[in-house]
Length: 122
Image 1 (tube, helix red, strand yellow):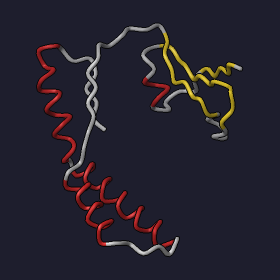
Image 2 (cartoon, rainbow, N blue to C red):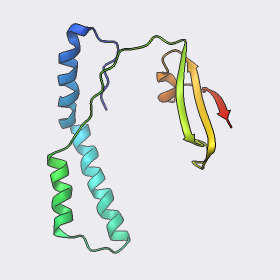
Image 3 (tube, rainbow, N blue to C red):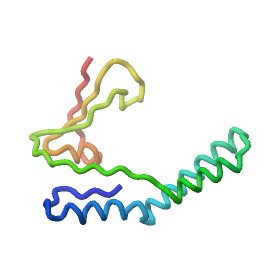
Image 4 (cartoon, rainbow, N blue to C red):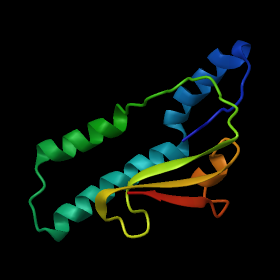
């Protein structure tokens, strides 16, 4: 996951190229290979037979990965946060909405660097 925050409009094309290039970084490739092994281990635990087609599909996904790219204007909020539809403390789903928020653009909440304000909407 690469991010380029608060760039100038003149630098946007270079930043887009850097993000697309990151799809082939050693970290990204290592992650994809790790996911393949996770899937194969799951199949082994269930004692499922791994078909040749499945193996080929997995390796094709490694060689032809996909990526999304979002370019959007940066807001300058007073506060921001993260909204959850499952309770983040126990991952149970109910009809409540949970919001963690903090002053600023919300990056400190998303990264876990702060103890955010916590709201429950019933």
